[in-house]
Image 1 (cartoon, rainbow over the protein chains, first blue to last red):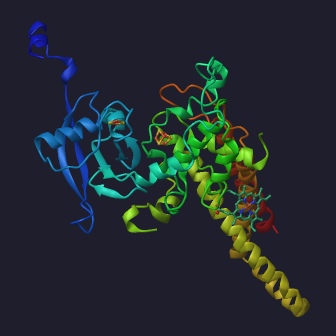
Image 2 (image 1 turned 90 degrees about the vertical axis):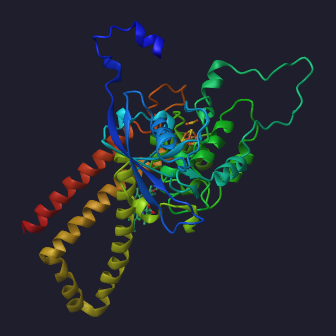
Image 3 (image 1 turned 30 degrees about the vertical axis):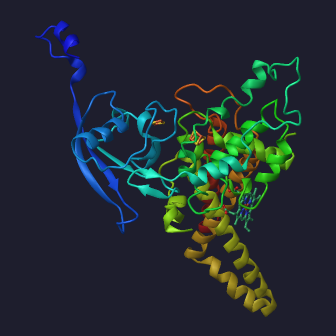
Length: 255
Length: 143
Ligand code: HEM
Ligand code: SF4
Ligand code: FES
């Protein structure tokens, strides 16, 4: 940094670093000690490109090391940093403070997941429902024929499912879903979208198995096509689309 | 529903503020469905008054001839029209009709299922319901 600034004309204030500040409100809650959550407030300066995660890490570094937050990739790939940011589920590493257009940024743990501490929630149930729909290609011929190196697919066949394969299991969709808000047994948009991901894969032969799994009282029929899952998905998976296609199979609109 | 799971609960389910017109349509569909169910039950009760003969029937029907009765019936008209219009949209959507085509997603990842066709369906159901309510009120109050 020092090297770079020495090459910049000293007379011109660097326009890049006109920093502004926001009030960052962080929800603090330790289920083992606290009865209810409370907010801690910090004034944090930010640049045009500062993400909410960076602001939280800034607080951790300079003000309060105890803030519990989970993150890893910092680039919307690992799915660790989902939280409510100004009331909506978003990835903290993928949300710039400047795009929130607010002087106050409130961060809370995602809804519909048990709180481990502060901003960190438990994903056991998310991973359970994900596993439940058999998230792998199902075939009879598990071993490849000797002269075959791979199961070939045309680019058109890839287009049918690649969007759904973008899922990073961040859980934002399950947090936004109105059915998830009240039904603890609902399989949820994340798992349903993954059921469609494999059903739409031309290599897969597990369609009937998966349709059977989701055709139950807390399965696909609890979806009312409110679409909130698709609106919050940070990877463009569009779970609502996949779910309606699956239901199309079950209702006989598609085959 | 345990508190440990940190579920948003009925308040979150019914909060229409955060996720666009689709979530508002979801709430209106539930409310109008329940409203119609309530009306349907009341309607069976009301029509059973015919067993009390002409007097009983006329007595009960007089309730709908008041200002409150007119407003109540206008609401029923609105709920009926919205619920039917939006219901047809949802049934098509549930069958996978008009929810877009899978494609390699690009930033900023606009979801194809939340498209203008469905938005037009929602807005026209609301407008149709409003027009039907106004027409109904004009007829009822214009007597
Ligand atoms: C032509 C008329 C109608 C159509 C097309 C229609 C369509 C629908 C559809 C598609 C749903 C499911 C919505 C969803 O998945 O969230 C629904 C829900 C419902 N409908 Fe209807 N409906 C009609 C008339 C009625 C009537 C007359 C009643 C009352 C007696 C009624 C009561 C309900 C109720 C209580 C629900 C459940 C609401 C909820 O839990 O979200 N519907 N309707
Ligand atoms: S579908 Fe989207 S919002 Fe849901 S878990 Fe996958 S990436 Fe996250
Ligand atoms: S830190 Fe990996 S998705 Fe945000």
